[in-house]
Image (cartoon, rainbow, N blue to C red):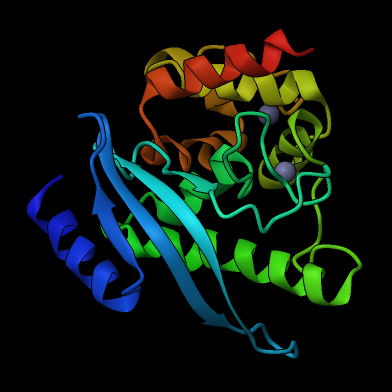
Length: 219
Ligand SMILES: [Zn+2]
Ligand SMILES: [Zn+2]
């Protein structure tokens, strides 16, 4: 991690004294321990709670997303709490998360905007039942498509996959391809390219290419 990220690491450790760095591979920095937080949402109740977590922050952050596991067994694994099959927490669709963090080298932005809201929703649900307070996306693949449909303003899955493919190409080349919005024009001739290009800073082209392939593999 760079100097900025090291600063954010010491900030994190002082904000969350139950957490400490743990040995990990050279793929990233690992933080493990008791994550105690206090949070509220507008008009909602304050929640104070803790979870035992393992957070791996990749060296490529913020161009790659951290992975978080709950290791205390407090979150039920019953399919109702957004836990991925590999045991990581499902904090939102990849592009939604990148949108929240891409401009910040400080990973405390990830903690504040992605992790704490999720844990708040889990604690709230454990205490009061009902749905996730932030409005629940369908879990997994359909949830991702629904979320991208919302972010891009496109309805169909193939339009979303095409948008991701175009983000995986150089602008100059993508602009010559058919626009995914359905206008029938080239991307470069439709105002949709402004909307699409706003995503370009969030991740490298290779990330979008791989993500498009993932999404298509599940169609
Ligand atoms: Zn989920
Ligand atoms: Zn168009």
